[in-house]
Amino acid sequence: MSAHTGKDITFVVQPGGHIQGSARVPGDKSISHRSIMLGALAEGDTHISGFLEGEDSLATLKAFQAMGVHIEGPDNGCVTVHGVGMKGLQKPQQDLYLGNSGTSMRLMCGLLSGQLFDTVLTGDQSLSGRPMGRVIDPLSQMHAEINAAENKTAPLCITGNRILQGIDYLLPVASAQVKSCLLLAGLYAEGMTCVTEPAPTRDHTERMLQGFGYALKREGSTVCLQGGGTLQACSIDVPADISSAAFFIVAASIAEGSDLTLEHVGVNPTRTGVIDILKLMGADIEIFNQCEVGGEPVADIRVRSSSLHGINIPEELVPLAIDEFPALFIAAACAQGQTVLTGARELRVKESDRIQVMADGLHILGINAQPTADGIVIDGGQLHGGTVLSHGDHRISMSFAIAALRCNEAVIIKDCANVNTSFPGFVALAHGLGLSIELE
Ligand code: S3P
Image (cartoon, rainbow, N blue to C red):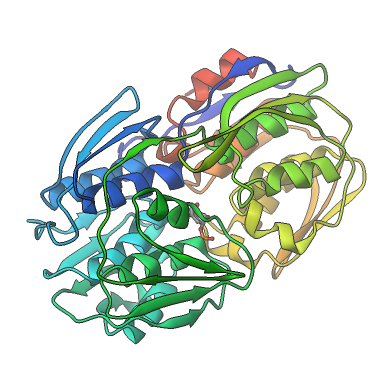
């Protein structure tokens, strides 16, 4: 049951079909969150186009409105944020409810640690079970004060009016959310804040800070900034989300006779692991019309069906495809031979335990999928049909929807309301491109 809509949604997808045509999927979720946060703290008006009107990025938007920021829109993806400056946020009247959105909670936790007022961050059942120690611990080292529930989970009570100190922090896990959290806290800290990552993760925060005129030093795997600066408003064109595009890239790859073009997709190299992995599996993917829009690389992507084969997924690609594994597991189930994923323990603490939930669903569809502590082993085969549980995880719902293209019976997916967190309009778009999907 979705905490937001109060009603459950089931997808019913008929087997077979192919994917044909061209489409632009909704805006990038990571960039949409950051555009609101930095726009709010900037001096002047930030004009955003292509903003994701999904529940997650809207949760961030509403949270900043609740802190006194005047935000117009979204209107067809256009948002104007009237920045209040680094010290202009006001204490919200109520707790800030962030729904299903881990990005909102982790990034805002850093940003709010530097404010003069106290805040409380809450979320839905899934978000309230996700690990927040990964941000609480380093923020405490910066002298922030955050009180959490048992096991360092939400609700998070953040005490304001603290004097933050810059730190030099080596991330124990490759996480863009933790990196971004600390950089946002670092804006308010005395001295330098430096974050070193064990493997490259998405760098939208760094790119956008520079777009807002904030000086950053990037050296190898370390990024540093000096606290106390200001942000200057700018225009942001949010590209289509490669994480949403991924469902259709896999769909067109696995369904015979498909030919699909996806337009204006963000192809930041810290996000394109899904393309690299699919190409290693034999996918036919062409990237063209490459250009740079507001500091982010963007391109059109053409995908034609191909016969995929199983691979050992290179571990260095894991953080670069972290949100795309549910879709990639469907590709693996349709491939010839075995696919082995290791080094992906993080998947167990996403919106659901994506290793277990995907393995359970694949078993129901007749595929041999063996979960391991930090990955999964999937033997490609014939997918049947059946009823699978998404556990309220948007990406699990959409992954099993596209699996139907290669099933010989219908797939019914329960608990799909949260698809609206990242991909409003998924059903209509998927239907238009050739998937026989209906809502129940
Ligand atoms: C995100 C980072 C990733 C990703 C999430 C969005 C971001 O999380 O899974 O959907 O916008 O920074 P981690 O940084 O925890 O891996």
